[in-house]
Each structure stands twice: as C-alpha cells, then as structure tokens.
Amino acid sequence: MQRTNFSYITDGIAKVIETEERLLNDLSVEVITQRINRQNRTIKQILGHLIDSASNNHQRMVRLQYSKDLLFFPDYRQDNDLWIALQDYQNTDWANLIQLWKFYNLHIIHVIHSVDVTKLDNYWCDFEGTKVTLKEMIEGYLDHLHLHMKEIHELAESTIQ
Image 1 (cartoon, rainbow, N blue to C red):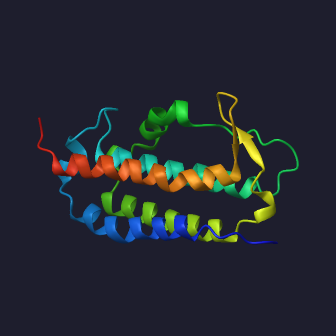
Image 2 (cartoon, helix red, strand yellow; image 1 turned 60 degrees about the vertical axis):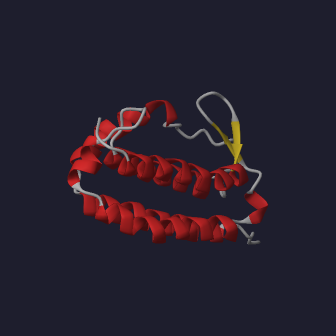
C-alpha cells in the first residue's frame, strides 16, 4: 500500500487538540450550556457535532479504500440537528465529551497517515449527488474543525445576551 503525506493536515489536527483541550476543560457549565451560536447550538452541542463529523468521516475514509463500487454512504449534513438531539449532547458529561472528541481525532490522524494513496480518487456521493473524493474529504477535515472551534471561541469570549 502506497502512503501519502497529509502531515500538514494531521499536524494541524494535533495542534487543535493540543491547544483547544485546555480551553474546553476550563469552560464553565454556564458557558458550555447557555451560550448559543447562530444555529442555536451550545458549545456542548458544537463539540458533539465535531464528534459526529469525526465518526462519519472515519467511516468514509476507511470504506473508500476498499469499496469496489460507488460508495453510497448516508450523509448526515441535512440531519445535523437531529443527530445532536438524539445523542443528547446537551446533557452529556462534559469531561467525557472532550475526551471522546480528543481521542476520535487522534484516531483520525492515524487513519489519515495510513491512507492508501492509490485510493485518493475514490469517491462517495453526498445527499445532493455531489461527488466527494477521499482526498477532498481529508483536505476539508481540518477546515471544518477550525470553523467550529472558531465558533466555540466566539461563544466562550462573548457575553450572555
């Protein structure tokens, strides 16, 4: 199996984990449960969404390396709020949520390092029919992580309205 170098992505994920874990652990119960973003999500729910993203992308990254046919994998984007509600992230133990987020992303780093370069053009179709290659998915993962960590920072630094 040929390997590829996505170290700029995996190093970026590791840096997010290293820098953000401390911030997340230091947030008060009021901050993580009462401040909401424009999508009406609390910090706990945003972190839960990042766990959902890690779990769904993990499945795609693995399956795209062995699927012989076009991969039709459920796309949860249109159901993000349902996923958040069904898993009740708002009432989940915060320390456990942080650890799940951390270790799932550490595993994502390992999976990305292990990706077979000959499979990078394999793709799946999202719920709108858009083809997404394994390479595109890997390259977009860090941006998605940064987007939602920025939201967490904005909420943590804001005042309750």
